[in-house]
Image (tube, rainbow, N blue to C red; front, side):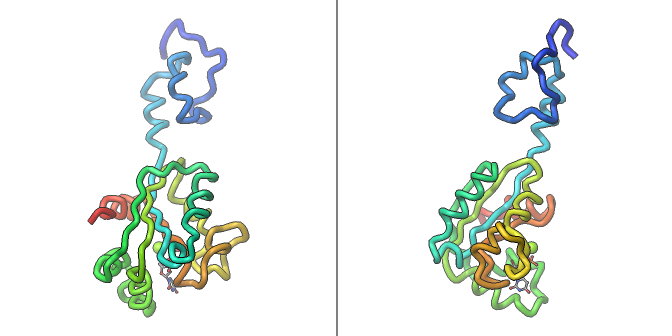
Length: 172
Ligand code: UDP
Ligand code: MG
């Protein structure tokens, strides 16, 4: 700790918001604690799928993303090739819906996003809702925008390891 600095008006590290970090010099917390707090921000890969882009829902979905407090760290409109779609969903290669899913994902442009927030992976999956819109909670993106279990408007990474791979691969 930094002797001589006041703790008056300081909030706990867990309550500090990122945009408040410039005021950290007024507090006694060691800089390592601030650094560790910043490192708890997480990134996830999100996709606004071709069904939603085609129906001009991208703007409304982006508004929800910003309203929920995510930062958009990268955004790119991409028309996936069939091979790229198959690579992206390789984990599902043995599933009966694989051919249909990958041709849908290659059927038109998608918008690929890197989203950042505290606990971004789980937070984005909560905002998306269940894979099947019939099972998605009210207020979720898939409940509101998905057409079917396949054409379900959005993608989100499911774990830190897959998020890292999907974010790294998104330019290739
Ligand atoms: N999907 C499908 N039929 C199914 C399950 C999934 O067409 O029975 C599609 C759907 O577009 C889903 C994607 O395959 O988003 C990947 O499936 P996953 O189980 O990983 O769901 P997600 O992580 O997207 O919720
Ligand atoms: Mg998945």
